[in-house]
Image (cartoon, rainbow, N blue to C red; front, side):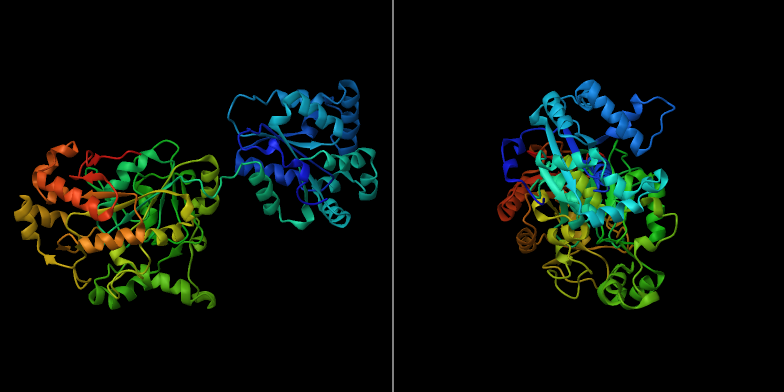
Length: 552
C-alpha cells in the first residue's frame, strides 16, 4: 500500500485538533525507530517504545531478545485484554496541555490500537504505518545490529505469527508509507507535515532590518534595541560592515548579530550560509561576547576570508572605490570562480580548525525548528540599499545585494516568512571616506554642526568608519533614494536615526511630541514619501536611544 488512504481525509485531520499521541507501526526493518528518533530530535517529541514497556514487566533474569519480548508481549495481551500499552501511554498523555505529542513506537496488533484509541480518544491519536518490500526488508534486517546480536534468522522471523499480525495494521492506519521508495528525510517530512509538526510556509514570524542608504544608518542601535523581543537573532553580510551598540565603551559587532552581548535567556544566534567571515575576528568576537557553543550556529556553507583576499583588496580597491579592504568581495568572487580548482577552491566554514567545530551546523535546520515552534526571528542586514551590487550606482557598490531580497537569500529564508520590514535611514546619509561614490547633494560636517548645534569636534569624533577607521563623508537627505529604497524593500516601517543632527535639543526628547517642530515635520514628510509609518526614532547614542512609536 502506498500514499494516503481516502478515508482519512476527514475531520480527524482538522488543524484545530491537537495531536497528543503518534502511533508508529510496521514490520521488521521498516524504519520505525528512525522515524521515531527523528520526531524526537526535530520536533521535541517524547518517544515510548513497546519493547521498553515489556522490559519493565519482565523479571531481571529474563532475556531481552526479540523472541523473549514477543512471548512477554503476548502474555500481557492475554492478561490485560490488549490494554497494557494504552494503560502505560495514558500516563504520559495530558489532553489539556500544549506539549509536543508523544510518539509510541512498535504496536503490533489491531486490538492494541483499538484499546489506545478508546483510552486516549480518537481525536488525539494519529496512526502511521510503515511498510517495506521483502527484498529491502531482508537487506536491512541482516545489516541491523539487533539481528546480528540476537542471532536471528530472517526467514524464521518473518514467519512469526506476531509479525504477520503487524501487516493488518495498515488497514487501520491514518497514513501508510512504503519506505523503500523514500529517504529517511522524506518519510519524516511527510509525517511531520501531515501532523502539523512543521510550520506552514506562510507563517510570518521573521522581522528584517535593512539599511536604506549607504550603510552606517545606525542599524546596530536599532537591532540592539529590538533584540530582546526575539528568540533567534540572525546576521548575514560580512566583516566590511560594523554595527556599533551602546556600551561603555561602545562595542562594534562585525559578524555576530547585535544583541549578542545582552545574553537574553534562551536566545540563539545564527550566521547564515550567504555570510562571509574572517576567522580570527569572528573568534575574538565570540570570546568578547562570551558565546557558548549551544547559543551560536555558524552555517557550514559560510565563506572564509583569507589574508590574500585582504591584501588583494587593499592593493586594488581601497583607493579605487573606497573599499574597506576586508577581503569580502574577493572571497565572494572565489566562491564563484574556484569551485573546480582542487586545493585552490574557496574555503568554507566547514574547513576551519577545531576551535570552530562546536559552533558549526545548519542554520536551515535551526530555522525549520523555529518555524515549527513559532519562534520570532530578527534578521539583521548589513550595509545599505544604495550600495547594492545590482541596484546601487556601479562601480561604487559592495559585493552583494543589500536589499531585503538579498538578505533573505543569504539567510535562506523565504519571503512569505516575513512579518515586518524595517528600513533604517539617517537624517544625513554618509559614505565612507575616499573615492566611495557620489551623493545627490554633498555637504560637509561644518554645515551639520551649524544646523544642529553639535560641535564640529564631536561630529568628527563620532563620524569615523567602524571598520575602515576613516572619516565619513556626508550629504543632504536623499528623498529620491528613500523612494527607490522603499520600492526595492517594501518596508512596513521606517526607523529614522540621528535626529539630533537636525537639532541637538532632540536628544532630550522622550516622546515624539517633544521633538522640535521642524523634526516632526521632517518625520511627517518621510512618512508621506515612504507611505509607511516612521515607527522608531533614534535621537541619541545611549541606552535610551529610541523613541518607540510602534503598534506591533
